[in-house]
Length: 454
Image 1 (cartoon, rainbow, N blue to C red):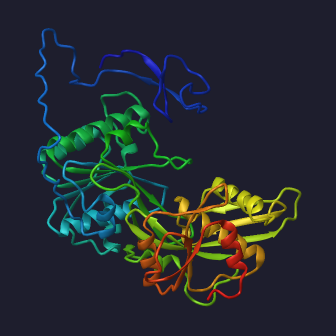
Image 2: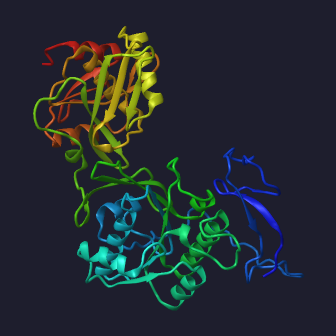
Image 3: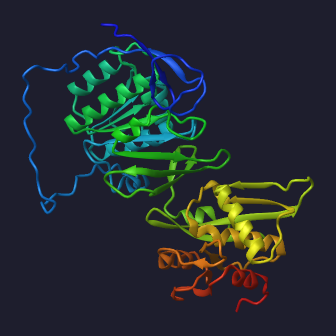
């Protein structure tokens, strides 16, 4: 193998430098530059003298294009996030924290898909075949016709996949794959990029769907260069808080379906159990609602989900009040607190504020502003919201409550779970719930302070 020279490659962003430095000039990360030897992979194309281009064939936008076929795995929550099933020839990257259940989920996916007639393979670079087989037996998948292999050599994996015909292949994980065409160590940016590129190329050429498992850094992003997320067709994040049995599969990128779609699972003794109605799982319907709690009717992907916002406003014991938030954006909380103080006259600047989204779910849409504000006001005034009331709406800096999308879907989901009223922006109709419309945040504060909601 020809040694062309050594460069220093950032293990965070993949930028190459000619000399070592303590900080990467591209991403500003410290101590991430590692020396790697750059060499041409065997069989790489060299410039050919006298070669002629074939030209391009253009087609109009109005041409008929059939919908891509789908491999239905039988795990409905996984199929939902993928857009109705896995597309043959596509590459999917699944990332998540260590121990969240990525291997369990994908073993369950290939086991279910193989029972439906798909030819599936599971290649593990982290566990032995006996370990994978033992997990499958605990999950009740011992009779599933899945082909197992334990290998890290990219050359051997590609050779085996070319000699056998599979519909769905899982690579667990991409960081353990090693190519002898590069002298960099396994898990380096060069190796991860090369392995991902070869596997995606194989998927496109042979029409096999490839699912890559990716490790996650401490910042919560998928380890390795960003080019991996660009070359795959879908990026799915498997999320879950420690101490909670709930797991959420969230689509961050999908060329064959909608993004921000979610699938909800519950971790059990025999694997992951699909949750058909996430709202009933995240809500505690037993007993009266305490002060500081507000039920938010949100939208995650294509489905409405009801979750509970819990707030606690307490006197501070230190000179600087604390602001702690779990499951919501801390910057958004600071904005809501400022609007409550400046527009509604509720002073919270000298008090500790704690906000939590129950169940471990993370909420990102602006429609949760009014629910967070209602929970904070309820705790500050020590007044509980009605048990049968849901809240949603976006709060502006001027104190206005702005309408949000898909109000009808939110109200119908709330009515399905027994709620009878909603505190929401104006513009909607009562429909299945009695709608208490608010135009400004001051109207909502006044309504929460009233004892009679009739």
